[in-house]
Image (cartoon, rainbow over all chains, first blue to last red; front, side, top):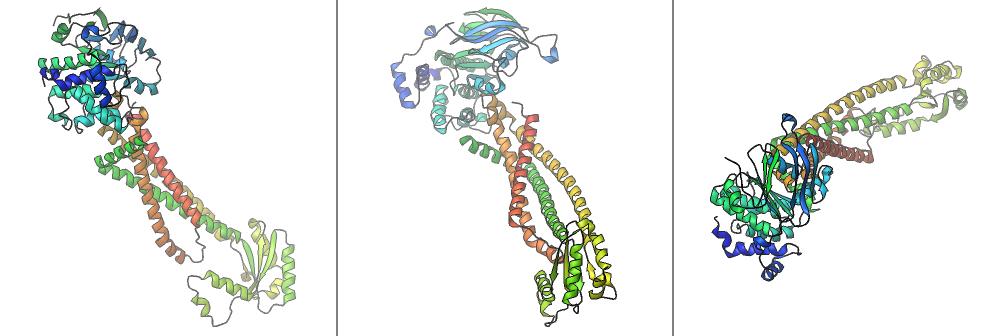
Length: 284
Length: 304
């Protein structure tokens, strides 16, 4: 799987289809195809930048792990990420990127400060609501987290099954999203029959199959070669163009420098830089 | 509804994943419920026996065949006048034979072998309002001169008085022992069953660690994550309980008549409703053990 594949029609139309559904009700192949004819593909420049409502707000957030009480993992972070943004979160290992992401999906709670996702305060959120928060945040990880004994289709379907979606929804949405990530021909393969890049596409497909408004990726290209990484980033960019807010934690310098998106830099728990159209900026 | 089917499917997958531990927990539940059931049914039967004997804490005064009606009437009046006596009845020789015949259901031929003779004496049956005072009443009767005259065995009047106080006391202490042992055994068995279920569910959780992590990630609700494990624990328990009920029923059908025949002098009775009640209670208890065991495991190994 390389770049060129996305330029071909199936993947392309997939992207258009996804574009069409942002903001419109969407329930089936036919309707989607119709819509995709009528709506233009959003260009990068058309994507709403810093427009209106913040999706994520960190308000003086600190996190201290009990094991290292003298060295906070995150120290007094305040920032906002708006709907439709594509944000890179950069920093060395141990700079707090993963803690940042784990707090977003409320795997850990901040020691101090407040985190708001879509106006909901995660620090006071009742634990039974957490699953509903996570349904609105797609997650992609470096190690893919696919189930080895399930096929590609089943892996993606699993995400819908366990939140109680009907079989009908699963049958229509899963092939759709697999077409979007360019794996329409590999539905019945198992993860170990796929390349690393393809596995990451499955994992992305699983993250977005429920159409979350926010997609969070923790080192999505950490295990992949540069060319494959480029393909994954292209895919993330296309997902972003459909209106999904995308947050990518990475230390892939080349990627960040090439894409020129908003960059949030963390260094030993401190927020050191937050710039639009930024670069990676750390000396390696 | 669809998620119930999903839980069911998942718990069946869990069965095949850990066959040995699954069998282990089913067998322990089966054994503990079987023992509980045996004690419950056995206890119930003994309780029945005791209460039937207790209600028989009566004094039977055997009367000689030659006794005159007037004397019998006089003795009856005398006994009726004693304070702890509730009622006095009279059993004729024929009635005594009839009673004997009906108590010998298992081999009625005995009665037929009597060749029309009736060796049984007539008797005065004394019911007491207070079973504790049986001794006192018996002595009063033994001291009565009419009784000494018309009793069945005038040479030895005390032998013509029968009362079962000692049997009752022995049985009472026996049932108490049985009850204590039963409660201790049941507690132990429930504990073992809980440990086994706990362990089985722990293994099931460990085997599905990856799936659980992903379920959490994509926002499966806590109930949905826990469902298959609760279902698995409940299914183990239900299977164990069903096996226990089946075995108990087999025991009741084939072993109980043997016991009843060996102890013909004791009224071994068991009503169908009681039986169904015990079976139902066993199944509920099994379900309870299964659910509690798997909840305990989830509390420790499945943080959601």
